[in-house]
Length: 245
Ligand SMILES: NC(=O)c1ccc[n+]([C@@H]2O[C@H](COP(=O)([O-])OP(=O)(O)OC[C@H]3O[C@@H](n4cnc5c(N)ncnc54)[C@H](O)[C@@H]3O)[C@@H](O)[C@H]2O)c1
Image (cartoon, rainbow, N blue to C red):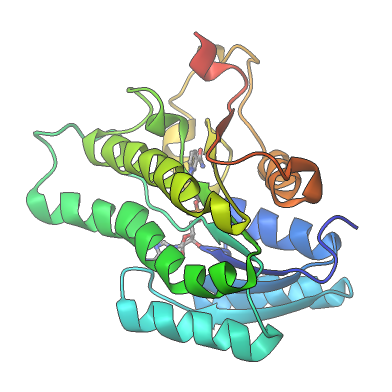
């Protein structure tokens, strides 16, 4: 098992890719903190992990609230001792709203959930990782963090921000033995995009299909594992070839 005895904190883990990562990490031996705004959903994921013989803890968090973030990290440490792996996954999609279609309150909403939360949750977890000189962080960006046209103005700006923040964090903290990388998924079939997926032609993707959550989870496991020890500050697209076009 590639994540034996590691403690993984995953935000937005009640649904979609976060849920897929939680279930897959647990199968690899990790103890998983399933954190989400949707506590009922988080509890269901925890039950599924326990039913399969794994260990997990559900935590309610709004990643835009500093006090929630502090409480989440505290609960994770009380439950499992320390945090070895952080996946900043929670995020919302703006359904391709252009800049002119984005009022300031919406802009701030997307920036707070998709970008500021990554900064805040990471800062809450980093000091212990630095002290132990061990830890791994994955930020879930998007192909919208690499190119335009895969989201609206706010979403694209937040995901480019996540890419930049990931590189900065890696350049600052790799010297402490930390590994900080990002995943840039293309269209992955999750509840987040179920309304828009029907309108995206599959032939916009060279692989002629959309991705599945287990494919992203497998990449995350690889990045967390010792096999990827020398990978730092990379942004790995998993997009069926979308960004090569
Ligand atoms: N699905 C895709 O095609 C796709 C592509 C690229 C990137 N992404 C990114 O992947 C991540 C996960 O997306 P998904 O498709 O699995 O979405 P999803 O909607 O299935 O899951 C997102 C989860 O985040 C939680 N969440 C939302 N706001 C929150 C908050 N303020 N605090 C705590 N939790 C909150 C939701 O409750 C939900 O459980 C997001 O960051 C998204 O931008 C998705």
